[in-house]
Length: 67
Image 1: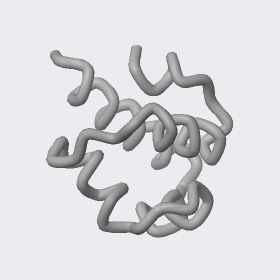
Image 2 (image 1 turned 90 degrees about the vertical axis):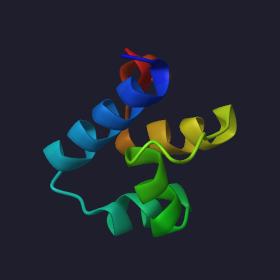
Image 3 (image 1 turned 90 degrees about the horizontal axis):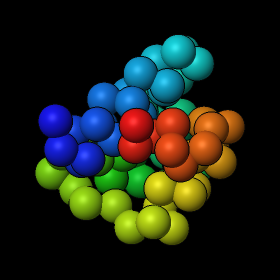
């Protein structure tokens, strides 16, 4: 599995563990819901800065998103 698919799976898992919708995660990270959806569908390639915002919103380390 490549890094973008691992990111998508981990992000979705962490989001669902919190009971959050994509919209809630987007709001918490200061992103658009369609961008979050694109990352989870592996059609977007987020920057490190965006990953940092997502990690902060999900209260996790960047490694948790990429492992």
